[in-house]
Length: 225
Image 1 (cartoon, rainbow, N blue to C red):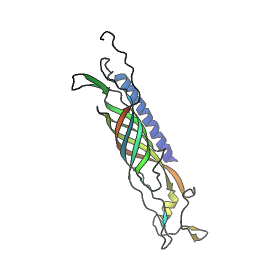
Image 2 (cartoon, helix red, strand yellow):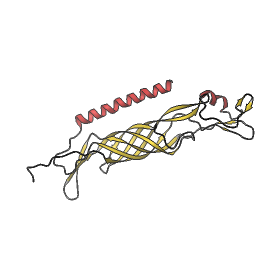
Image 3 (cartoon, rainbow, N blue to C red):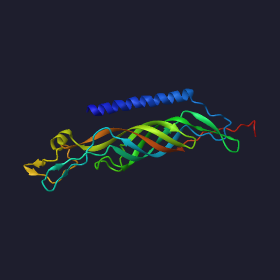
Image 4 (cartoon, rainbow, N blue to C red):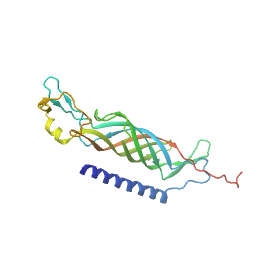
């Protein structure tokens, strides 16, 4: 419970920081010039891939050693990779000169994002599904002129894990799991006496590509036909 409350507090702090960054961007961001031929919006849809480090120890689904019926518990990986979809906000604009001498003003520089990671490319444990709608995060990074971004992220995902008492009791891998004095040959992963859903905080980076999802309506300058 304490870990869940701590995660919620972290999420509130990050939400506050994201809101603050948006406010600062609106106040001090360089406005787009009206004479720019192509003005894109600050808000874009993004797709990308990324890797995350998991500071929390996770465990694979427990198994049974068929030779002596002892419980086998192995630690999961500390790195997971995923496919990401989300929204990015870039408060600042920058004007570039093109090869034909014209200018193009685009969102550029520091950006903030929120996203979900529905598809896991490499799982931390075999208990983690490949598709998980409860895998999400926020990030801050840099947007380049070609609509590519590099983001540093804080993310959360939910995974089914054996409870602490079970890990402490059987992590030596030398004891059978007995029910009515009979050693068990398998585990029910939905058994709430042994397993629980655990929310895990991770830290990572992403490489993303941005797509325009909203376009500014720029009225033509009638003085310059």
